[in-house]
Length: 112
Image (cartoon, rainbow, N blue to C red; front, side, top):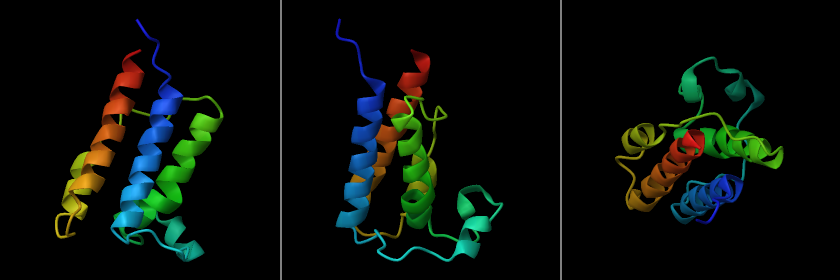
């Protein structure tokens, strides 16, 4: 039985999420203000859109974990939040599926 490289699976999941954000034109070239990152609310809901939180907080933090050969914290359950946040976003299905795939990798990697 082939050993799964969870770090590679995470990197693929991160790349898929990033790709989908770019395709939907939700990727920002401009970083939010420093104050926006000082939120104490989960996902910075009071200062950032979910796509900004994913781009500027979630993906960098998760990639740093993988670079240190540490599994990101989990198991994650981001898909329900994404489904709600992007329910009005046209063609968001592929983005939500990419986030669901991340949740799946997160869940399975923490079982092994």
